[in-house]
Image 1 (cartoon, rainbow, N blue to C red):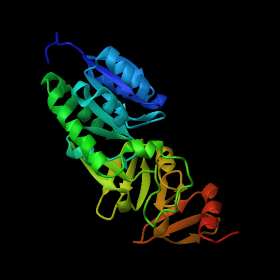
Image 2: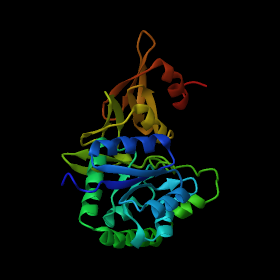
Image 3: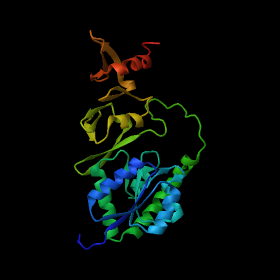
Length: 284
C-alpha cells in the first residue's frame, strides 16, 4: 500500500460498549484506518452511513431496535459500504451470509480472525468491489427471506417463555457453533461436537472426539453464552457437557472428581459441587 493512500474509513455498529471498543482497538493495530463513527442502534447506523459514507462498516446483526439486515434494507444494497457482519447469534442465517461471500465475525472472535476479515474488507475497497458485494448482499437477503424466517422476524417476535430444548440442542440465544482458526483457515465446530472445554492461559481449549481446538476466550464468557441445560462449569478451568457425566467420586478430603464418557476425569471445585450434586439428583 502506498504511504499516501487514503485511509480506509470505518463505521462500527454495535450496541455493546465493550464490543465497540474491541473492534476499535483492533482497527488501530491495522494502520491507515480512520474510524468515522460508532453507532449503538440500527437508527444511528442508518444515519451515520448516510452522513459519513464509510468505506467499511462492522455491523452487529442483533440490536435493540432491529437487526443489521434492517439497516441493509433501509440503506439499500447498492448504497451499502463493504460490510462485515458481527454476531453472537449463529441462528441468524450465517450460512446464507457465507454462501453469498459476505464476511462475518462470530463473537467471540480472536485477533487473527478479525485481521482476516478486515484484510478482505480493505482489499474489496481497494479493488472497488462494492458493486459486486452489493449483489452478494442482495443474494444474502433473498436467502434469508427464502428460509422462511428472517432475523427481523426473530427480533420483533413477542417475548414468551422458551420452549424446552430437545436433548443436545441449545436454546435460542446461546452458542450453537464455534468459529476456530487454524493455519490461516477458519472452520466451524458445531456445539454438538464439543465434549468439554478447559482453560489454557488466555485461551480456551474445545475438546472434541477428533481433536482439540484453541480459541481466545475467557471461561466466564463461554459459561455465560452456553446453554446451562447442556453445559455445566465444574471448575474455574473446566466446562463439561452435562449429558456426558457418568458419575462422581469423592476423595478423603471431600473433593469431587467428575467422570465423563470416554474416560476423561476432571476436578470439581468445592464451590460448584453442591450445585452439581443437586443437578444430578444426589441432594435435595
